[in-house]
Image (cartoon, rainbow, N blue to C red; front, side, top):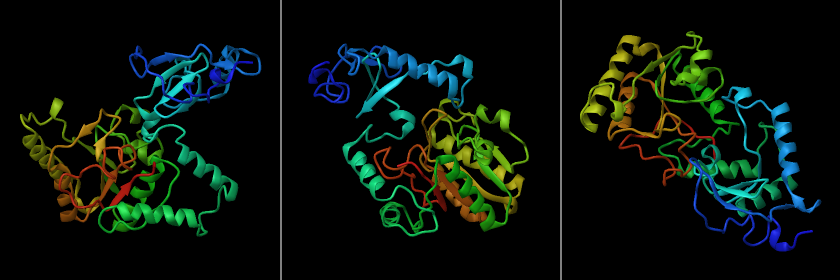
Length: 321
């Protein structure tokens, strides 16, 4: 049996996240090798566990957005803080925060303790009941949401939040169409994948989902031949207004935008753009939905990304905490 210094929970072990090293991987990569990360039962390196995990994964797990025969998922043994590690003792610095949701780190002790405490008291309850912790979570979120966004609808994932927001907009306005940008990702469910602007929608685009795409600002390769951020903003808003006019504003229920584009490449809108979209929505009675699944809850340094002068959206989809 290895001594305490070889265990994952020992000071300086994989779980501590305290050692320093030089990154070598092109993505998040190895900064350490824990040669003493052992299988405590067999007193041997955890290679057997690695092989078993990989074998079970390849036999039974269907991975999203992947050609299944072409992928080779890394077998992860554990994680803490900004690091995770594999069964061979290699530690990785996770620059992507998993899928942009571990922004306070893996296995934060306060989060772990709260989950354990709640699981011991009440694991789950039907949505029709009032529960103290859900009410308190909603109250705390409502304290931070802008304007009069005081009602919090908890969903299971980002795509579901988008689906509900769009459904609410259509019911509220009685209109069928929703506008979204080409460089965008809103989820993989039925309406959300049609709203998505990137190529992942191609295999699922029914052309009957009531979705119209438009070009948002993208100064790096401007579709409007703009030379400055101000020109890009002005021309992008003019293009959006033309789209609204020629689609018929009386047919448009909502415009959905990511406050900061995530999957397309961290696209920050030029100053004044979101405020301009808000004004167009107000003028035509269109619901303005901000998809903040990837960038809300403090990920940009504030509770919600700066809106560059825009008044609050009509609806915000921000399900990940």
